Amino acid sequence: MTNQEFNEAIALLRSKDSMTFEEGFHWLIGFVDEYLDQITALMKDELNPDLRGKFIEVLGYSDDERVIPVLAAELNSQYRDVRFWAHSQLEYFENSKAIQIANKYKIEHPNEDWY
Image (tube, rainbow, N blue to C red; front, side, top):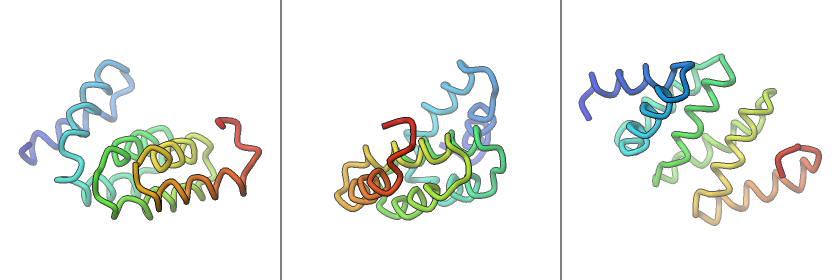
């Protein structure tokens, strides 16, 4: 993926059209580790909770353990959807540390509505 293609995929991901979003999403998840720092920065700068959740979902497809503390930090969000995506991606990360963080969050926050 070139930088231009990366920018195109990000634009698709930001789309309000679900089919366009899916195209960008599936394009990005194949290159998430290659663009991990850029995607993480975009997520952290994103103020819209829906878009932030989309970036978190993409980050969850990374194989790089550096994403675990990034996802864990998003569990502190004031926005339910952001917390949901962070928790979901930690739960499915296939890493004992990520799963431990997700399980601890579930115990400490039993009133979340997605369990």
